[in-house]
Each structure stands twice: as C-alpha cells, then as structure tokens.
Amino acid sequence: MKRDWLILIGCVGLFFSGFVFAGLLAQFGVLQAVFIVWEEKLDIGTIFNIVAAIATALAAYAAFRSADIARAAAMDSRSATRIQAYIQHQQQFDRLLDESQAEMGIAFFRRIELYDNLFPENRYADKPFTLKAEPAVVLAWGNRYDQLKGVAESELPPLEEDFPKWMIGCMELANKMNFTHKEPEVGQVYINGRSYSYFDSDPAKPLHNLAEVIHRLARFGLIDRKPDILFHRHMPGFIVAYNNFYCNIQQGKTPHKII
Image 1 (tube, rainbow, N blue to C red):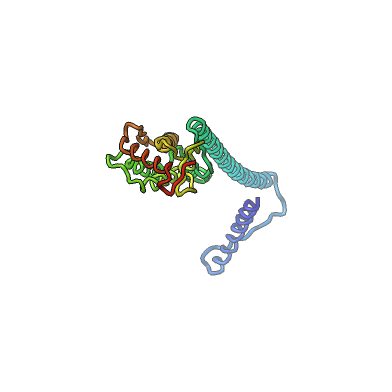
Image 2 (cartoon, helix red, strand yellow):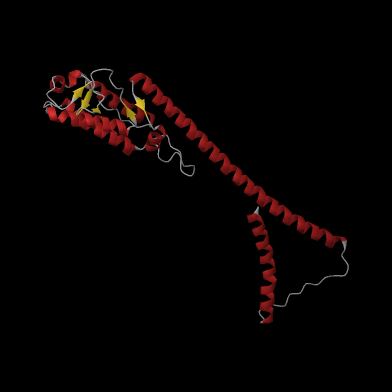
C-alpha cells in the first residue's frame, strides 16, 4: 500500500513538473507560453469530459492494482506449491529410511541433515525443486565403498593389524550416510578394548548394509549407482584372515576385546 501511494504521488509530481518545465522553456523562448484558462461557466459537455478523465485515471489505477494483486497471488501460489512438494518429498524420504531400518536392522540419525546433503537446494523456496540427488555426494559414497570392498575381495588379504583400520573405515562411511549398524548382542569386537565396531564373527553383514544403503538412497535420488554386494564366496582369503584375527582376540593375543 505504501508503495502504491508513492507511485501516485510520483505521477502527480511528474504531471506538475511538466508545467514548470514548460514554463521555463517559454521564458527562454523555446516554447510558446502555456496558460490555464478557467471559464466562468461549465457546460454539460465539459463536466462530462472531466468526469470521464477522472474515471479513466481511476480505471487505469484499478487495472494496475489488479495486475499487482494477481502477480502477488501467483507468487504465493507457486510458493505454496513449492513448499508442499518439499514436504511430500521429505515424507517419502522418511518412509524409505523407516523401511530400511526395519528390513536391515540399522538406525538412521539426523535425517534432515541427510536429506539436505542429498538435495541441498530443495529447502529454499527461491531455488528450483528437484527430485534428483546431488551426484557428487552419491559418487563419493560409492567410491569409498569400492575401496573397502576392494580390500575384502582382494586375493591378498589384509594383515592382522590392518583389520581395525578397515573396520573403522566401514563405520566412518556409515556415519557419512547418517546411520549406524545394529550392535551384536554378543561377540562384538571392541577396538583397543574400548571402541565398539559393530562387527562380530561375520564381517560381511556391515559391508552388505553399506552397499544396500547406498543403492537405496541413490535410487530414491534417481541416480543409477548400485554397488556390488559381496558374499562369503567373493572374499575367501579375507574371511580366513578375519577368522584368524577374531580368534586371536578371543585368545587375548591382541589389545582388542570381544564382548
């Protein structure tokens, strides 16, 4: 409303400034002097012309206001549609995480942060909404998983002192995807006797969870990134070396513990 008054005042000021400018030009002989002559009598035609001029001005102002209101309404409508799309998409994302938790025995944390990492611009109403996740984020997860998988399927298994580093790498990747594995009820390896690892006698389960979470999040974000899932038959040397590592912990030959 304040802006409308400013526009109206500006128009009136511009109208009168025209007379002032014309008068100045007339003084220098550039234009013929302009005078406003008021007649003593107003006939019906003159009155009609005045009323018509006022009506035209009011109609022009009303049209301007209508266009301004329509423009504001359209912006509000687009904003409401944008917010609704964001809410519905995030609800679908939460359902995906709930299903993953129930089926895989994992737990997601800071879900909004995970959503924002995948769809960083969706929360901003002035930016375009997208169903496609950020490719760089999914690619970084997939590349890190490939590194961890490469250690497990290598024909040359890791040394015993390298297993804790590999296990920590698996936990760090899960943390980047905002989830934790389910802690084994018994037989969990505690690195250096104090840090839980989520690993028990079977190292395949946490690795499988990493691949499955990446696949599900990528698929939700319309990105084709399906990491290969490893089974015991794919990493025979790694399984043998891990079993030896686990047995040495049970026998107290390492600084780690099994609880």
